[in-house]
Length: 72
Image (tube, rainbow, N blue to C red; front, side):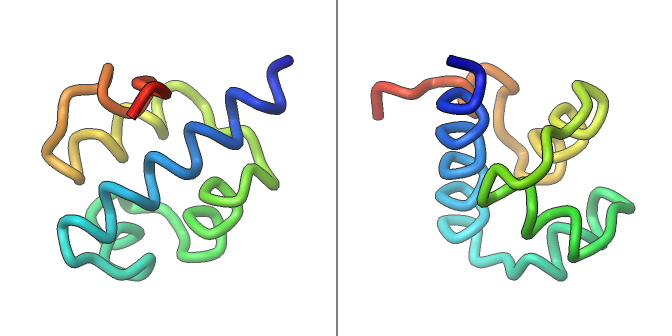
């Protein structure tokens, strides 16, 4: 159950990153996280902390809830 949530979360992070014209490296710089971590979050290889998810939403300049909108 949770694995599917993390997969969808990762896909949304990637979707918004690409829509913003950012690379994984750009997003890593904006969040003070590693490129390796961003890549692993996008493919649900690691489960990010809530603090990391908030940092990603802020860096992408989107409401946090948008990352959890799995309908679109």
